[in-house]
Amino acid sequence: MKLKRFVAADMRSALSLIKEELGAEAVIMSNKRVAEGVEIIAGVETDSLELVKADAKKKTSSRTIKDDEVTLSKAATSPKGSKVSERKSSEFAKSLLEILERQKQEQSKVQKSAVKSNSANSEPPAPLYAQSGLKDLFKQNNDVKEKVENTHGISSYKSFASEKESEELKKMRQDVDSIRRLLQFELAGLMSDSKKREEPVKAMIYELLLSSGFDRSVSSSLSDEIDSDASFNFAWRQLAGILEKKIKTGNDEIITEGGIVTLIGPAGVGKTTTLAKLAARFVMKYGADRVALITADHYRIGAVEQVKTYGRIMGCSSFAIKSLDELPQMLYTLKDKSLVLVDTVGVGLNDERFGTQLAKLKEQSKLNLKHYLVLPATAQRRVLEQAYEHFSSLGIKGLILTKIDESQSLADALCLCIKEKLKLSYCTDGQRVPEDLSVPSAKDIAVKALSAVENDVAKEALAFSK
Image (cartoon, rainbow, N blue to C red; front, side, top):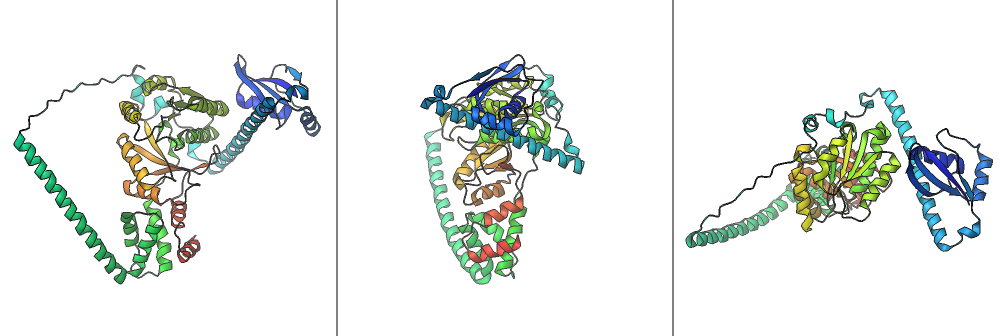
């Protein structure tokens, strides 16, 4: 094996030199920061290096200093531990090189598109200190602290008689609620039978929506808007348009508007990977100098290193804070950035630490944080609704729906969006960065949700309408 030392201004330049000098089979052995920028020790098997030299001309870069070359015999690299390490390093190097190539290709496409359309968004969003709503924040001292007022409640005296009356009223209220539910159930049955007789097509559409995962209230709302005299095929195609109008989607506002964006949600929903995808999307459009990553997740093992690794790969700044109390001080040092992405702690909704994290986010309300709720499409409706209820007090700007490639139905997530009038800002359908992140189309989402119905006639009608 042949080892070489490369020194360049940044990680991207160093990776380009490695690929140019040693080829795609190169293995990164180590990397560290030096005065000139970044120093990487990379190696390649002697046979692979000879093939690279035969196929391409060797290029030199003015940014590299004299390379140190070391040749190792195959016998020295024969232990099983070395082979495993070499294979892991090789896979890591290949993934870095592939990301670099994809970023170059995507950036080239974006630049060509911008030239053709003469888009007004060719410039990145304004720095944080110049953005609306954040100017006053950075005029103040960087040591921002909120005063917490201690309130002392006075317990009121309740007589035995008043407590007895309260218990009787409570019991009476429970009885009334029980009677009301019984009447609602009976009335629903009567209305359902009547609807099936008078409007059979609407009734059938209603049943199909229930079978595809939509809840009763949304199914009823959608089926009621169908024309009374419509045939089944026409009604099902009409339903796609009705559902499309009820889905509110984003316009890539995180990238085009910038600001201080926090990704919130339960543990394991894909917040960190989504953070990297958003950062890469911004870097491809505006460059790495105007975006920064901050992680407050010090509970999960390796979370901090994961975010910092993403930052090094993309060439953007990345930081870790132990508590959200440190966020104002950190933001003051990043006021020249256009976009700051904050990865919050992911804990279970029933975890005792959840209330603490939620309270700390509320304490930072003066920072004008833009909270985006991250939820998986694979979760059940009740889980999605519970997560929304827990985080809604923060003021949610939009929903980022992950793992849609693993979900059999989008109905549960769409029911949440429709009932809560929640904007669906982004969707993810894989682990690749940044390809598997997209701004959803209301029409495509509607068709995908309705396609989950188990009815051949409905599927054919929906395919005809595409």
